[in-house]
Amino acid sequence: MTHPQTALARHLLSAADLSRDAALLVLDTAEELARVADRPIKKLPTLRGRTVVNLFFEDSTRTRTSFEVAAKRLSADVINFSAKGSSVSKGESLKDTALTLEAMGADAVVCRHGASGAPHRLANWIRGSVVNAGDGTHEHPTQALLDAYTMRSRLGRIEELRVAIVGDVLHSRVARSNVLLLSTLGAEVTVIAPPTLLPVGVEHWPCAVSYDLDAVLPKSDVVMMLRVQRERMYGGFFPTTREYSRRYGLDARRMATLPDDAIVMHPGPMNRGVEIAAEVADSVRSTIVEQVANGVSVRMAVLYLLLGGALLETVEAVA
Amino acid sequence: MTSTHPPARPVTGDPSVARPVLDAADVGRALTRIAHEIVERNHGAADVVVLGIPTRGVSLARRVGARIDAIEGAGGVPVGSVDVTMYRDDLRLRGVRALEETDIPPDGIDGKVVVLVDDVLFSGRTVRAALDALSDLGRPRAVQLAVLVDRGHRELPIRADYVGKNIPTSLTETVHVLLEETDGRDAVLLGPADLPRGETR
Image 1 (spheres, rainbow over the protein chains, first blue to last red):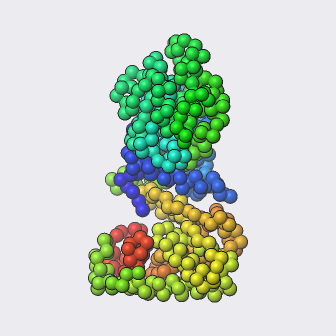
Image 2 (cartoon, rainbow over the protein chains, first blue to last red):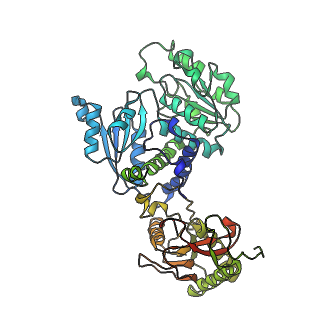
Image 3 (cartoon, rainbow over the protein chains, first blue to last red):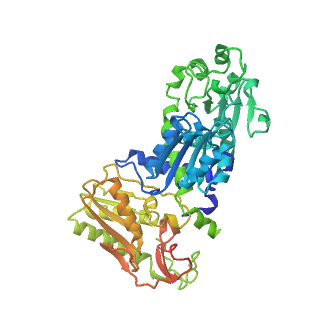
């Protein structure tokens, strides 16, 4: 019943940390936990007495709420700690904040930070588990897991699915985590963006690269549209929003070129009319609302697999 | 199912030196008797829902359900499964476990007589966890417990309503329940402890 070889490591910092077996364990666990949402009592006693801290240095509604609901459904105590209105705005360093949380007995810290790599640093300072809930333009592993979960539940498989990830790849932690996870799970990923919105070194990613959306769409089972992240853009990455939208936006005409059972995904929040047209976002192909519901199940699975077992000291003493 | 008799010292993976206590026919007879007792005790099977505890309890629940249907005729008693992993009291004592399927019949368990089915009744902790899981799933009118083997050594005030076979054991022994669905044949074997306590059932 126990699969020690597939168990998660202590932290979830990068989608690359997940082996194929570990990723599938998360998805299978999430599938069972999804049923909790249909029950009269949407709560399991499993993490009673454990404390989960949501440490958010960047604005986020859906991810923070999703982690909060997930932790509460597992009966953990949740502390929300956002940078605004905390000692961080008084100049406290990440390390001091971490040590404070440690002293309060946090069993897990869910961290979102504007700086790539912040959760990795945090993991070295505290004894509890660290879950990366998005760090700068680097990674967002639970988003990739919920996207994979959504693909599997809609299309029945992930292996050999042709996935197109379109748009602002340069600023997207969602794209990077998805490319890493989906290639581990055997999907064929293509990233599509204007050259200015592709990161340096993308040729070393385990995926294909294209500049031409219209050429890729007819050969795609999944299209994942990325948000144009204006808040991270400090220069001219494309001439005008209209031109971007015309070349890389998904409208009804482009959607019609997709194979019949293809799905359209978006990690949210959407810029309707920029990367995705309203009629596409609201179409039956769109999984955008499902992705939010699946996010809770997947985050429950991650928290259960990180915190549900033996206490860390016990495990380390045995190891 | 198969007519081949188990050898005196069967080799079945772990239990290399385990002796048979029940053979396939014994298992079949015990389940038939349990099904009759369930119908007798509940004056029919109108409100009965049979829920197995994964893994082998689910196979046993299906067989008991089929036997009740055979006794009571058409209608079909609802059969499902209830995973107790998230309710176990020993989660923190060992590594994290993968979840099994929970499958509650569409009509639910409110007001029903739930018969929990497991293969071996030992410490009673699994049943305790199952009772907690049930209370989150609804409010049955009554909960009854059916087990293929009661091996004693209870650690909680729990007893079975229907027992296939009482097998007195020592704590150093291991009970292996083999079922057609999971192990290719039906048998109950009693062997020396080959797994640390806690891994045994």
